[in-house]
Length: 166
Image (cartoon, rainbow, N blue to C red; front, side, top):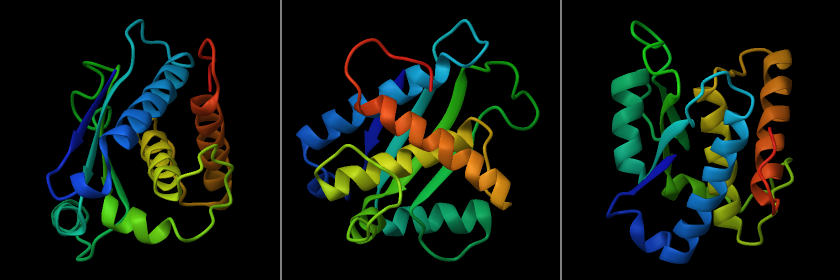
């Protein structure tokens, strides 16, 4: 299950049809990821779309980095009590401002989406979701493993029909 929150400052850049498509595709990513998990309950996450000032504040307060960033992931499975509700993954926060700037660049991953901003939002959502699932990219090997999982989630999100594990 996905909860999508769109801050007022981000709403003009992400019209309702784009939000609906994003919600649908990220929900499918969650279902696909859940098929590889042992939890009997469906995975849950929140996706928040915000702007640079809001993500800057979060990045400063939680990561000691005094600048905006593109995506943050706040995992509920980590730390004390992280095993109480293992199906609740946590929160993904994306700056639409930064995503819009990055959308001008080409991503190395294949993303089945014509709208560059939506493609970037999907990429960042998959990246955040992988962090919630426990992936990281501190080493080349970790980055390769995470990128493979991200691509599998993105590919599955674009497919029609019954959701497959990714």
